[in-house]
Image (cartoon, rainbow, N blue to C red; front, side):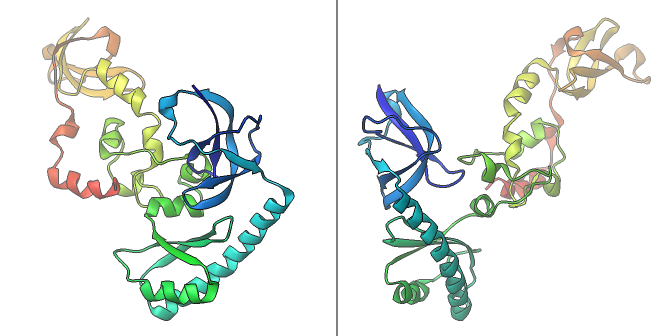
Length: 291
């Protein structure tokens, strides 16, 4: 077992483990640590705890120090520099007529590097832009192309539910979301209904997926042949959340289907969910929402 603390460098970013160096540290404190990008200041998200050695990436780097008043002053200064750098870089992009959108600017704590995050439809030749920026800032410049989901996480906003984006409020890392989840949850496959502001599938499709998978295992499919207290029949509709199954009985094939609790029907022959018969071209068109 190894004693660690968890540190994040962005408001809702990934948590990295560091060696507390024998000190007791608390959530919310700021610490100075060494990372692959150099010396950085991060916020403690996980206080001292013991974890399995297999969960730690070796070598585990120690905390250099708890952030001082001077360190916090430098962070505030960097935030002001980032605003000015954003404006200047936007002007340079327009000057070079590059097809790219600047999203965010980040100074490393030690000012050894400035990172410019941008989105673009394809590859962008920004070599001249980097030279131009380096001549102004006199430090290392890195331009990093990000995806639309990362852009939404950085900028924030409100989702169709009226709440702040999940990605910018509490999701440390993006979870894979698929069209299969939307289909199994019985949602409309209209892209405007299941897509977030970023244009990709909504992250919240992941939250209830495990529950839906459990319900699908114990609920007869549409088309299944079942036995009920009123006789045998075919399942024509299913409500996973309420547990109700609508069955068209053999003895009343022209009549209205009857509704039963899923516990009151016995599966005789499995059926096929309508999702399996969906047009393959439509499926392919929706795949773009997953990336």
